[in-house]
Image (cartoon, rainbow, N blue to C red; front, side):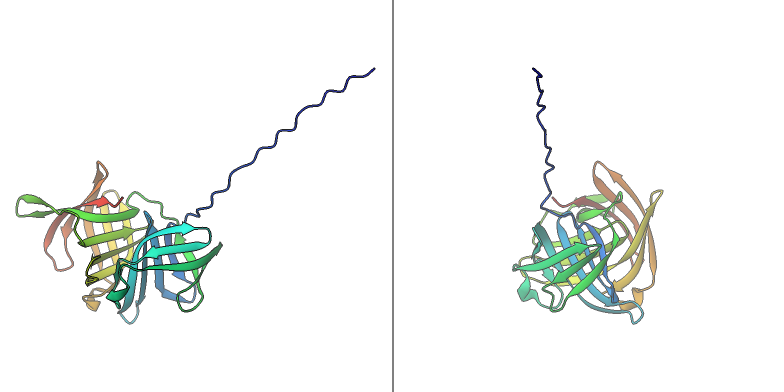
Length: 229
């Protein structure tokens, strides 16, 4: 009599991540002056014309991904402050390109970078040097943020309660050997700055970004930025 040995079949199931990582910078395949940046669950949309040195619009705020839905709570909108505080929902498909529905028309966005880099993140200015004194900047409704992906940056001065929008600027950046350089593609306050490059000294210490040099107006600055949580 033969004895048959039945070995149990072990099936291993890998759990699927239902939350898709959309971090990084995205550019409209039909319009190079239409970008979306997402870092640290913060979203920013910008529309501009580099050649014409025209800034059209920016808006954004914290976001979350649920299935194929991108839900954004608007904290700033340069055109319509009444949208601040409201949540919008976009449908998306990520199949090599990011296809978005809910922005008035279907937009196909090509990924520029995946949000990797030493400075990649969404930052809030927390200290600024005045004279010889470093002054703390507490978290208030009125705030200045800077969102950096792997290659792109955008700063925005906003008030999340009143909807007041004070300004923005953005473009590409590099951070090499302690030198941070911004290449400006749009600037809401002064279009003449478009095309300019600004260089700063930079370092990350204890999770904070120390940023020093001359501002776009030629004034000396020393700032400390901290990642939002």
